[in-house]
Length: 104
Image (cartoon, rainbow, N blue to C red; front, top):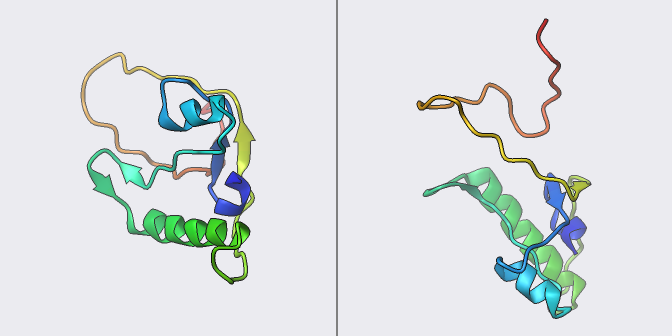
């Protein structure tokens, strides 16, 4: 289901403490999407979420539309929290899925 939605990454392990995890526990297909950071929505993610929603509606034959998927997601069941050693602001210098290598 997530593949036709078109996310960059699909985190496949669920938790009963989330809405989608609770539904999955009772065998109701569900997933959660993110369309930006806290209190800030990003237009490119909203456009992709609308397209993904239309794909799902087409998949379950609610609407008649060609399914359009631009990306194949990276699927993982591993997630790690990274905590800052000091307070402050983080300004990311890379985007999601950018290739990076360890500095020398």
